[in-house]
Length: 262
Image (tube, rainbow, N blue to C red; front, side):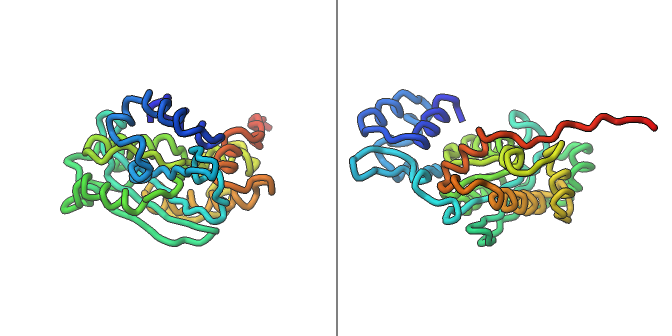
């Protein structure tokens, strides 16, 4: 997501704009103006963002008024055969949760012509796994429907979110505008630890499942997220409160203990 667009959405997450200011600011963002009719709230919603017109006629995000316990969150993990510019998604897994309960799952391999050996060694996914797998366009279309307007959550959310959004754009489905939360950021504010990698937090919280497979990692991140939200202060009530808390609250990161030889 381009910085200007991200800043605009974050602004709507903090305040309400009169309709004229909303249109003026949105009209100044080329990539969104070329993609949708900025006056049409349904167009924004298709891209995953719920706009709200207040009683006073101002525009803001619905997530400012949605309690996070009522919100549907979609916890996502992808495996890829390379970086965002040269690689593609080879597996995607996601878990939908609401008020601590799982309400849906999504899992699929994605066909790719090749997987580097080091990726296969890391993920356990080999070219034979992808024989007969559906195309990227087919999987992403189904995933986009599954995601809907959920809040997108991942461990190191920027990687998964940006990769999926860029992949959607490449095949003509538009970008993602869903609100998002990083479980690394949220864990830093709620769980004292020296490190916040997925493996470290799983061990710390007693989560036992296979590592580096999309659905398993999504399930693990969902369990970490649920543990985090149990620990947020009472003042955090809305979805936007939770997003802001994950970015700005005091870190609980513990200092690394120096290794002392006996």
